[in-house]
Structure formats: structure tokens, C-alpha cells
Amino acid sequence: MALVVVLGGCSLLGKTGSAESGGLGAVDGAFHAAFYKAQVAKIKGDRAGAKEALLSCLDTDPNSDVVHFELARIERMDGQWAAAMTAVERAVAIDNSNPWYYREYAEIALELGRNADADAALEWLLENKPEDDVAAMMLLELRSAEGRYDEAAAVIDVLEKEWGPDPEWHFERHRLHMADGDVEGALEDLANLERDFPEVVEGTLQRVRILASLGRSSEAEAVLQAALNRTGNGRLHLEWAHMLTATGDTQAARGHVRTAFASDDVPMEEKVDIAWTYIELAELQPELRGEAQQLIDLLIDAHPTSAAPFELQAALYDIQGQSEAALDALTEALDRNPNSAERWLEACQLAIGSQQWARLIGLAESAGSLFPSLPVFPYFRGTGYMELGDARAAERQLKVARNLIVDRPDFESDVLSMLAQLAHDQGDHVASDGWFDLALEANPQNILALNNYAYYLAVRKAKPQQAVEMAAQVVALSPGNANFEDTYAWTLYVAGDFEEALTWIELALFHEGEQASATVLEHAGDILMALERPADARAKWKAALEAGGDADRLEPKISAE
Image (tube, rainbow, N blue to C red; front, top):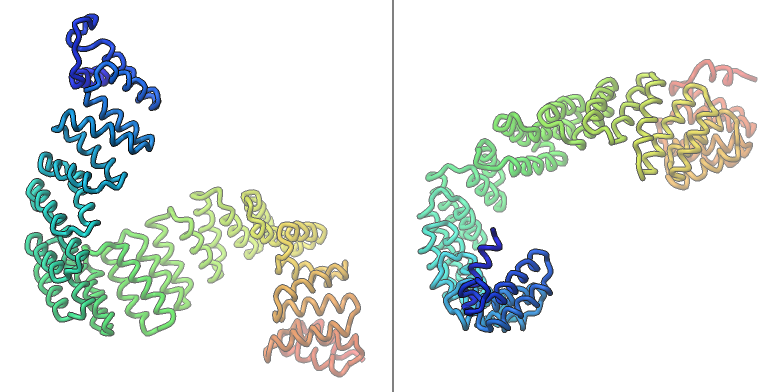
């Protein structure tokens, strides 16, 4: 049906006639067939075939404007701009009253840089087809780009007359005046916008920003006050707050911010961004925490079903060290919008921070049902079960996590290290060593895996040289860590290198400071005894006992002859 319409219309536009047209009346049969072939080729995307068929049409009727127009469009699609211009010029010459030809002419002329020709074609369209707002905007942009602002403004006048009053025309005039450097004219355009469309606050906001940038703060405040009296729009309060903050009057600004937060006119996303700014500042300036809390309270009152205010509340509680309260608030956010893996992840981390292991397992189970392909949630479940002493459940979850990991060797190494720890805690040293070996195969620089593996080997007095090498790698990767230095010292002690062990245990004691741990003190005593310094060794063992060390193990050392 579409082809019938196109062909019928185009055949008539072709202005061809023949008495020998095989039953087609006044329509030339050859022209009709060629044009039909061209349309079919176009539909199939065969532009070369369409062009060939159209040229056949011109063989039959060289004065068919529609064929020249169709050729122009094909040449343009092929990037043959000069040929396209030749074709469209011919179409316009044959029929100088067709607006489609003028639009095509203008677009090709613009591409060729023939701006004057494009302007003339678009001017014709403005006068003869003013409802073509696309062509009018092309003319507006052309004249604006060339700095012909008065002529561009004339285009806006035609558009406004054709389409009726609209804030857009005021904004376009404002844009032209600003481009021309006429700030006062631009301000007047915005004032006219406020007069004609008093509920459109964008004009007021722009006018206030310009006045403030010019240092005309009193005028800006007067404009804001008048607009607030007229509309009460919360966005105006927010703008006033920004202006006051820029001048250093933060106390007055806060009042306007609170009013804006209670308003439905301000998008919630904008309120949330501002609240986050307050929370970030409050982390460094505790005196702002009360103000941040007020804003969050206003957000919760205004948007009680949204997750974002409760997420903000969780963040504020967190920086105040209230982990459980933060987790409660984040749970409220998840109740309102559970479809955020990042929010579930944060909730799990808060549960770990507050050592709520059962709650961690519950959160990770809920998250896992929503995001079953993410390995982090069975990993968290494994962590929770491990802390609660359920080794079998922990192992099962950690193995699930490992099976879900793809191209994340560092994470896989951490999961394998936890499996190694579980096996160690169960006394299965063969399995533990196997898991540690896999962890280090996945990430040879996993510091915790290296440290723990080395220490457990040293405690068992197994593979002493391997333990020393791993512990040496740890202190090289993370220098100045007392725990790692203690491990290195103990592996050296087990390997029989007592002098080097003493050097590293003294470094560990130095980095622990005045509150040295019982383990490091006891190790220091053992190393000193191996170096045949019994008095110094007993002093360290006594210090270890005072630091909370195991009396059943330390007292016999202290009392031994």
C-alpha cells in the first residue's frame, strides 16, 4: 500500500505523459517501472541500485523534480555533497514552492559551508512554512553562530507568533543577549519571563545567579524575595542558601537549606547530594553533625518511603562510631529498596564491624537470594559461620564463594586462606597446607596467607626453610608491622638462626611500643634463652605474664633453673 501511494504521487510529480504507456494512461510506463525499482532498492538498502533506477527515470523525464530530490538524498547519504547540491538545485529550479526541497537544499548547503545559500533557503521556509520549527531553529543557530543576533531574534519573533507564548522564547532571547555580551538585555529577558510565566522559577534562578556574579547581591536577594512571595518554591530557598554560603553567611544559609529540604519543589536527588556534603564535612567538623541530622530528619519526613534518607542516616551514625545504629538505619533503607548490591555489601560490612555474626549471616542470605551470582555474599556467610564456630557450614559457604569467583585471583586467594584457617583450627594440617598452597598460587603476594602459613609451619616446626622464606617476603612487602616481624623472628628461631631472630623480635617490640603483646614478649624470652641470656629471658617472660600471657606455660619457664 505504501508503494502504491509513493508511486502514484511521484508519478504525477514526474510530469511525464505518453499515449503509448501500456494502459497507464498519462503516466509513462518506463518512468513508472524505473521509479518503482528505485523505491524497492531504497527499502532494501541498495542505494547504488536506487540511484541507477532514478537516473533511468531522468532518461525518460529529465524534468522530474521529485527524481532530482530523491537523487540529492541518496548522494547526501553517500557523502557526495557536491553531486547532492547539483541535484537539489535542479529540484528547486523545477519546483520552487516545495518546502521539502528547500529543507534539503539548506542542509546540503550547510555541509558545504555555503551559509548564505542555507540562510536564504531557511528564510524561505520561515516565511512560507513557519510551522517548520526544525528549520527555524536551524536558521536561529546559523545566525547566532555568525553573530547576527538581531536577525536571529527576528526568527524567535516568528516562532513565538506561530506557536504562541512559551518560556522557551524568553530563554532564547536571553541566550542571544548573553552571546552578544548584552548582560542588561539578558537580565531584562529573564524579568520578562518572570512577568509572563511567574511559576517558572528557572528564569528567576538564572537571573539571581547573574546578579550575584556581578556583585549585585542586594538586587539578587530582592528578586529572590519577590519570587518567594509569589511562588514559595523551595528551589528559591536553596538558591538563596548557595548565595549566602558564597558570602560566608553559613548560619543564615542553613535556615534556607532546611526550608528547601521540607519542600517538594526540590528534587530529592538534589537534597541527598547536599546532605552527603554535610555528612562528609561533619566527619571532619563534629559541630556540623547536628545540622546534618536535622537535614536527614527533614528528608525522612518528606520522603519516608525512599531508601536514600536512611542510607544517609546510616552514614552519619557510622562516622559517629554507632555501628549498630548505622546497621539498623541501613536495614531500613534495604527494606525500602533491596535492589542494590552495594547497599547489601555495606550492610554486611557494618555487621562485621559491630561483630553481629548471626545478623551478618541473615543479611548475606537475603542478599544472596537477590544476587546469586555474586561470590561476596557466600563469603560473608562463611565468615559469620566461622566466627560462630560452625566450621562445617563455614567451609560449605566458602567453597560456594570460590566456585562463583571469575577472574578475581586476589579475592579467590582470600577465600582459600580462610579455608586454610578453618582446616588449621580443626587440626587438619595437611588440608590447611594444601589450601594455603592454592591461595599463594592464586596470589603469591597475599600477605596474610604468607604470614599465617609461615607462622603455623614454625609452630609445628615443619618446613623451617620454607617458613623463613615466606616470612621474609611478608616483612619486605609490609615493613614496620610488629605482627609480621614477630612471625619472621619466630621462623628464624625455629630454623636455629637465633641472632637474626633477636634482631627481628626487638624490631617487633619497638613497633608495638609500650603496650607490647604477651606473644611477642614470650617469643623474645624464648629467643634470649636460646642465646643463653637467662636473666633477660625471665624478664621478658614476666612481662608477658603481666601482659596476660598463658600462666601455665610461662610460670614453669620463669621458675626453671
